[in-house]
Length: 327
Ligand code: NAI
Image (cartoon, rainbow, N blue to C red):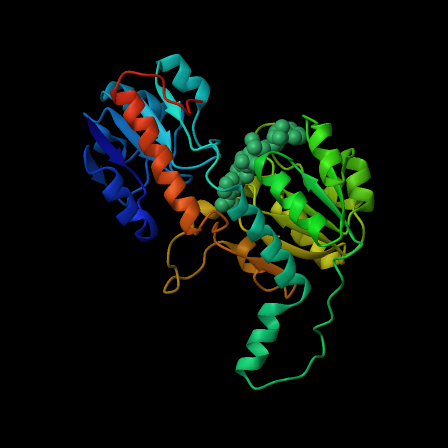
């Protein structure tokens, strides 16, 4: 079976080549979009990643070129128009669970690094500046942490924060009382979470209901000096509103692994370029903002799980069985 893998990066290439050795596989570094979709002509299966474009136009052209299956090497699937895929009879599959620990632990890393000013402290050390001025943090113990989106990742995150001795408030459309009781977590409304949380961490998928959930209005309801962490998807936060809230002091810390305009920046080396994105440029000037380049998933275990689940989907499809992780 012919398989075309888009947007392949050095960190995953070896694992992908090994896993796909029994397929007629081609790995390319370009992203799938209207200008590159022609490469997929004649490939029955196309494997994509989070910055590929699965718009209806692209899907129509994939279908016309003979593609029947699209697999995304991610849990999130907001980059694929599922309605259009259904209409066209294209199967779509994802990797629903590869390591909730990877992402949850990265969210905690952002919290600790921001709170204890680790990046600043490290830079000082490198300059033989051993002063402690400006490095005061706060005890996590006893603080209230709001978790928005308490699915696979949000649950692991909530459990870790309980381990620090935090009070954890959870917001989700679906409430799992038995889990909450077992881990000492309380479900609460958005309003309650905004009002009482010292830290708020986003673990929601991006969809019409969650886009810009954190806007001027939401930020205005939060505690002054709140720490906001986003490892979900960039557009859960209206970035301009967050910038205004940092400038006013409402937002005390901002930790981002995702950014709404990340697609043209993240995963690539732009160190020789003139940065064109004035919004991220502004964010990078704040001492209380920490940004990583969508790396929360990037652990060895997660990469291995992504590849093995992708392979499961491909093998099932090749044997004319339903993909185990069809969307
Ligand atoms: P999940 O599907 O297990 O959990 C999502 C939770 O959000 C569910 O419990 C669902 O009920 C809830 N939810 C959905 N819409 C909602 C709404 N409108 N209001 C309240 N609750 C709502 O997903 P999982 O695996 O926990 O991943 C969450 C998100 O994390 C993914 O959708 C993805 O965007 C992001 N992610 C980020 C990664 C990174 O490297 N930064 C890696 C993997 C996932």
